[in-house]
Image (cartoon, rainbow, N blue to C red; front, side, top):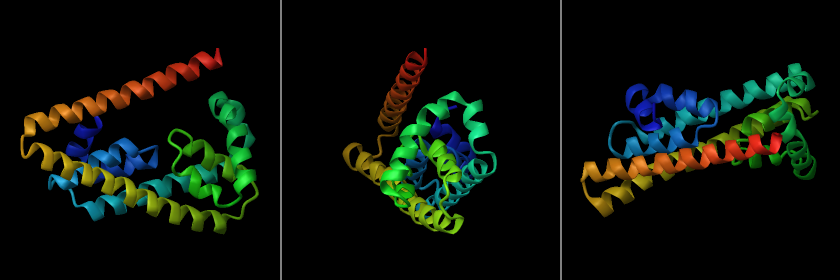
Length: 187
């Protein structure tokens, strides 16, 4: 099921679950749906914030509770551990803010931060600010993308859907290529 269909069928629940994981695509689609009048943009941003924040706190807690045992169990995460810990050592607590913008590494980074000795309160505060900024930026990017499409194409829904389909196909292709490349590097 495409992110567009998930948002249409499940609305805010799809936004919450999608942002609990790695949610840019679903969040852009939700912002686009808000521009079309199917969802409310501020509620989309609020739900996205909640999903991302709850997700990152969960992964942080998992890293804090299970730590290195999880890295041994998931070799792909272990591969990213070195990059994440170097970034965290270099930038300190502000790295929490930076990791929110690293697609594909957010879950791993939250676990790494959990493994580190940063205070829980500091993590919760930085993460709240980071998730709020991220949710607003990505939600409104989708919303204004929808406005731009409407302005350029008018209300030509059939053209709009093809353009959206092309964006989804290109996005999935790039994601699949990166997954393939990671598997090649692991071999």
